[in-house]
Amino acid sequence: MRFRTFSPKQKQVLCWWCEGSPYASHMAILCDGAVRSGKTICMGLSFFAWLCYRFHGQAFAVCGKTIRSVKRNLLFPLLPTLRALGFVCRVQERENRMEISYGGRRNMVYFFGGKDEGSASLIQGMTLAGVFLDEVALMPRSFVEQALARCSVDGAVFWFNCNPESPHHWFYREWVCKAAQKNTLYLHFTMEDNPGISPLVRKRYESLYTGAFYERFILGKWVSPQGLVYPFMTIDQFCPCPSGPFSDCVVSCDYGTVNPASFGLWVQKGSVWYRIGEYYYDARLAGNSRTDEEHYTELERLAGDYPVSRVVVDPSAASFLEVIRRHGRFLAVPARNQVLDGIRKTGAALKDGRIRVCLPCTDAQREFGLYRWKDDCSRDAPVKEHDHAMDDIRYFVSTVLDRPGDAGCAALAAPRGNPMAT
Image (cartoon, rainbow, N blue to C red; front, side, top):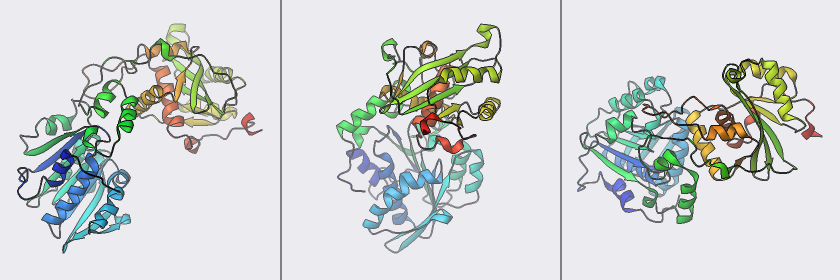
């Protein structure tokens, strides 16, 4: 990694703990704000310099959502710079730790993942002189508080880094709002604080997000989503169906018996996927439920003569997945179902034109105008109404568009007689 220069805020992060700094007595540093704002790398560089300057023979922890994300986002990008500055870093990947030394001082850094409530037991019992919590808002409170409780060495410091979430989030209430009370240096970052981001790249990021995601990821605000989930999907955003040939065809399914079932037919032309047709059946409105076999008949009717390479299905619809497998025509793939992450990725894909919804998809158009965020919710969540076409579109983006080469890994059945193979 090559550093051109540091912004004033990055310099503050690098030097806040040094002798003579007005912040040197603080017990914690907390940096939040926009994506790509330059806070993570300069915090990591400062953390490793601080621990080698202040301590010898002590243990430290660097924590992320997963150990893999810690290594990918922080450790591996920093290692060349640390070594170029004279730090000796011996990474022991099997033990998820690193011995780091400089100027005759040697310390041990352990890497932890805080992905769920059970993760707190992994760090329990350690004695630490400091902890770096990267993307702290993504970790469960039990893990974070257990990590902080381990810091019992004199002079221990907490290092927090995150992008904003809901203002109801426990970390916002307990740490961001109480930074002064807890003797914490709080620094808020925007993309302007990262001299490594060009105006062109910054503009591209700004075009990816709307609504609450724009306020969080671009402006760095702790805000609750309000109103429509996809407010930009007005009538002029829907397009006519393209003409062939197409390079791939996929069907995405949100399955329901009492609740509506929504299937979308997608075709790929160039780098864009078009949702050209749909099957939408509301049992309550029709006054009659359909069986798995009846839904499968409609799936075949929707697919028609299109060479569908896979059918992406609501992962909870085990019986419908089994019906598709038994018929043997389509490759059945359980969808990835991370709701908030999927909504964010779907919004970005719609905004930058990687997916288009065509005019014949009238039920999808209707739901785009009704799909809303919950009000007064302690966590971000859409209202569970008018969300069936929204869910099948999200399944498509998360499973096919976001991971184009991996969807077949979870296949339940190999396709037979696929016309694409001839």
